Length: 294
Ligand SMILES: Nc1ncnc2c1ncn2[C@@H]1O[C@H](COP(=O)(O)OP(=O)(O)O)[C@@H](O)[C@H]1O
Ligand SMILES: [Mg+2]
Image (cartoon, rainbow, N blue to C red; front, top):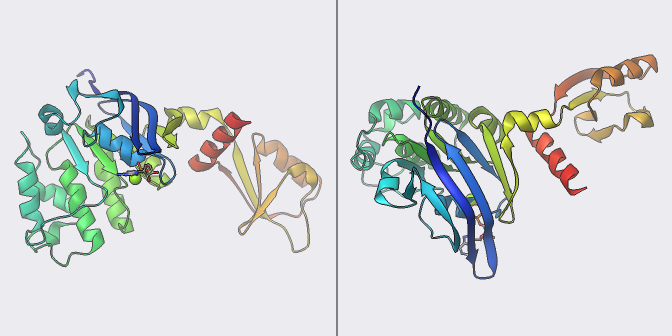
């Protein structure tokens, strides 16, 4: 088997805009065949961090190496695919023309035909882009990231404004890309997308890395189930359950769902429509961060 090369080595990245420290010392490592999800609230510094990795902005401090080359160098750009967060296209051109233009910059570009199909642009290939809807433009922008058969792809909130079919198309292209040895950096607010594509996550908040690890490890750190159930009107759950209420009903988070359920039955708690599910990834992460700050 081909040994995996290091795609990204970033150390101590710092970037300020005036008084705002957008990125305050972020490290990132990524190998071929790996996908990392960059998470964090709006304004956390994700796009700024990406722009330094892509070589679009020069860090105030720190270093980035892309397959051993300086970020933004010709050698780095030749192996890198990008979808900008806001894409502007020459509207008099067709997707076929735009894709061919981008492909011409790469050594072994992919066929734009199969990419167009994967992103649902097939029927639009020869229409001028003037009048394209936001979602249609977005799909072309995504195809653009992959057209050069890159070794590394950066995607900043790629599915914002896409319909479900296009989102699913994107997930399958991204997964196939990583399985075939591509390296991927993705920012997204869609947890299902992160779970479907990424092996690792790096969470940043106020420019600092607050959590980093493989998704499997993160899940293993809190083996917690959530019990959800309804109670008849006017009936309150017993105090020992520590249940919380939401629009969907009552919830209990526990490491011992069997024990809790047995006791509920033994005490005759009149629950209905009970479900037991592992905590969603976003809940696990919220829990880890809460435990860390306690
Ligand atoms: N060009 C800029 N000029 C001034 N402030 C900026 C600029 N770009 C980003 N910022 C600020 O830096 C912080 C991080 O922004 P950004 O990296 O875009 O966050 P994210 O992508 O996580 O939402 C925010 O406070 C944002 O307002
Ligand atoms: Mg952003």
